[in-house]
Length: 619
Image (cartoon, rainbow, N blue to C red; front, side, top):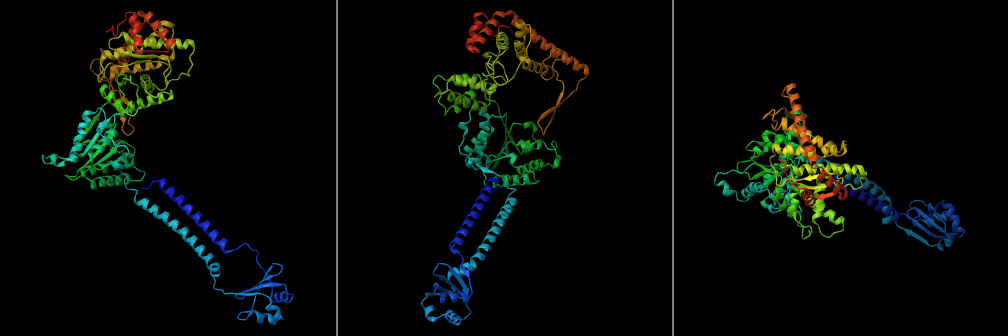
């Protein structure tokens, strides 16, 4: 299908051609017709009188037209009799032959090019202009017809269109995922090795992972490693407002890949058309569902030895249609996890290749501070560090630039222009110091890496807690410690100011949600034990949770509320106890925060050691 931009360029070209033709016609007419004044029309008798009065300087005869130039420079014109010479005609009007012979007489033939041009050109130019108009009109109509016939063609692209070639060396981590895909690449390169053992080529490979984990990058790496034609298309390009277009484009895409076999067809964001059928608006006759049906047919319709692999990516495997995931279609599902600390360090090194880092820069420390970051987050982090260094006029990226970019990615840019009064600054300092002190006191809490009262994003201040190692499971004791830390700022305000501010609102919301999930979802309640409550319902085509089915009684709901309240109260009491017992440490932390606005991990550890506090001394 032709793009609208191309049609616009053609219209401009045609318009310029019409303007050029018009200018050319004007130039031709200007050369044919002079701007001299038209001669005065007179009778033959008037011409004879002028000749007898010796007022005529020159006479020109062209056919039956007689042009005379008078001695005063004026022009007159008349018509003589047909098939009669001018001299005979003037003799009949009484002109003396001697007087006539003294006047220069010029005879012009009627076959000159200007004569015929003057007659034919106006007609020809008109015909040409009309013809050009119809030609442009029919040309546009033909283009529209071709566009209509190509409407069902897929906008499929070859990998060669990519400017930068990627390989598995450009993808850090994901060892198991790369191993799975390397087998696919090897199958395409050496199919005989597998076919001799009775192995069949996998029909489809589905890349599953959170946004930013590198699904598209890994697909590009497969294209770079395979050495076979690699076609790529977005699933959203299949669907149009017209019924049947998506199915037609699907057929065209698969046919193109089959003609180039062995080949790979990559469909990005397949959930755009692969959502569960019957769950969206329009029922089974929805255009999107027809496109999905065609994909299912095409994948089942492969010949036994057809060397075409469908590679697809999605971050919503929960909403995909079961028929798409059954064996015989997407045989392999490659899961891309968030990178661990070693993978994060390797990813940072890849994105630091074209960035001048200072010699004392330690990417390992950046990897420690970025648990839960995806590959895209880490790429953004390195880019923000480079921007910060450039903004500050440095030629190298230093460690502090990397640390600042972590907080910028997590919370947003600093808002130093947000002026706080002395009292508000003091409240914020005690609030964040409370979080940090409770976190440092509890054994199962994450270590404190930074405390700041500088506004970032929506946060007036923040305490950066990061786990010492990557965590995939979370225990009940860790949840209880996090709850107590959440109430650290709230309890600190209670202890110092005997009052509360709105700064703790987000902490309270997080704590309430966490406590309720411990009871109804994770089975971590001492009262209820290993049981979950409620069943979540989702609209598949929206991908949103819209309701929770209550599969328990009103009495149980009341008991759940009481248990959630009990967990929250215990966490609050634990935080209050720590704040009250270590008031001197809290005052010292708040004072240093008020003066410096930011405390790093080393400074924080040194300060609490002065008061004899050991990290995690309370179990």
